[in-house]
Length: 294
Image (cartoon, rainbow, N blue to C red; front, side, top):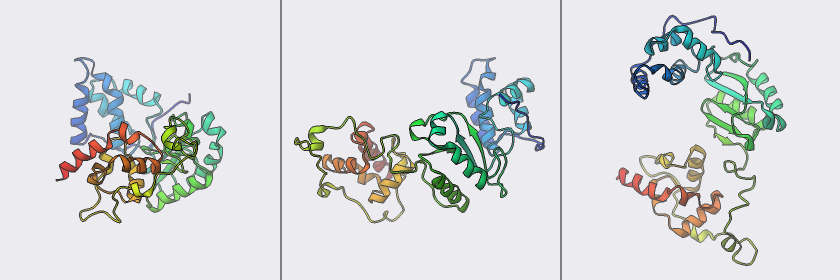
């Protein structure tokens, strides 16, 4: 492991915002009296987020004071764990996985893109908006190669798709986390191949039968007055699924709340995750959320 040192250029001071200090006090109370140092990683992580993605030295002293720890003990934690950045990072902080599965699937070519579009690893781009580093496994091996940008994963990348993604971020265009190819989460490319209801999928004849469009649920051309509901409030619906539902014409909780078995068959076929809606109780959640809206 390389020696990790604090950045030579430091701000004069650091203090948690009122909101973050309340959060820190609540976090500390999770531990017994005299064991408040157990909260050090959580508080450092919060300080890093407040400081824009890195830990200035005054933030380390601030955390040490709150936890009644010696400064050097907090420094030891911050310099040991590579999740803590000791120098400023860009507005878009790219962590590129270089471990074996991603390497086998083209991570080296992705590094070349980062060097060309952003610059050297660990350095800010000329406009100060981006920086990148190579990291160890991020746990999305089945969708290799991949990067983490801020809090989101972008998977199944190629040099061209990564460059387009970085340019979209620079220009302020909307981007979609998750697989960057036609794949649903970590399902096989082209859709699921196992755990299928063979009798229904093949109509008992061994030939796959598409679900009729007559079973399509009620959809809208655009959201109603007041704007679309936040479908991501439904447990199991992320940003990409929300976009897919919007593309189908599903914008509101009450639309999902009204789905019957026939509608579910059509939606499951279109989104290619048979049974997930039922397992995650989307309809029941939507009924509750629609009632809150009323």
